[in-house]
Image (cartoon, rainbow, N blue to C red):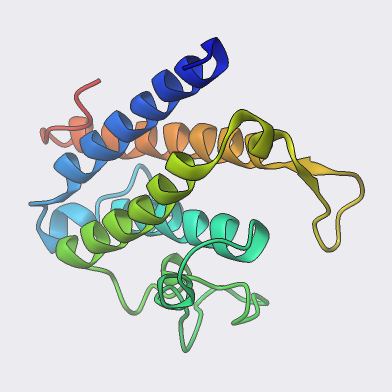
Length: 175
């Protein structure tokens, strides 16, 4: 194994650990606990977790062309409570009339993580550097950039979830 492959495995293992901590923190939450928010105008815990899973499906399926369409389609909604947001761009977090339960969120995280793991196991360092163009964006993006974007995105929202849970006497992500 090359040094770059070893470094990637370490990075991937850290991301997998964050996934495990997130699922552990969310798995047994009640609907009232999933509805907790940092402030009334902020997303609830369930919305942040749904956004993490839906973002994975978007980036890997729509942008990178990977994964099962059924995983991507599971995040489609029939309505949105966000004014001006098209249904094509809406996800679970954008329909506040249908809060998602713990088992549904955990399943979404686990299914999207399985999609990610399959790609990470297959991609080489050269595959990560392969460039592609995104519709509506100038310049070239790489798989490596998309992975980093998701890792930082999940770290951000995982931190928010952990803070909300901890502020309410619940166990957050045990980092």
